[in-house]
Length: 161
Image 1 (spheres, rainbow, N blue to C red):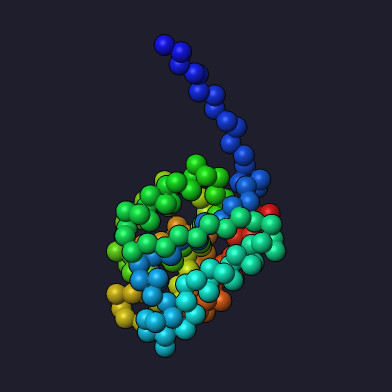
Image 2: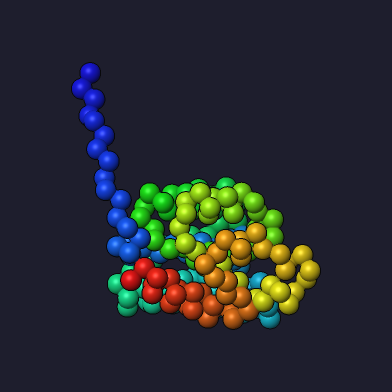
């Protein structure tokens, strides 16, 4: 049997990686249609297009991902580690208030991240005021609509440059 010996590739430091992952949680695929008075009229595709323009201008690769399924979000975050992702922006949607498993995935990959919300979660229903992510995030942006993504992305680009 001719088995090839696996050679470990050197891991580049975070400073040398120029890849950012944006994770959009459940129901964000309905942006533009769902409660525009709370979430705005911009669609997810439009938000992502603006983010791509922003990263292209900075020579940074952007990966975007949306799912309504917790396991898919966890799988995507876990994959980011081996893909050389240097920073994550995450809008966990409704999982903000419920998902210990998603929190654990972010802790496991040890990639810095900013938590983003279109609405001000602290000015809404009581159950929406608790986040399983804020205490482990580099930062939190909420209540600024889609501008929050762009501000968080500015920060991420500065962090990895």
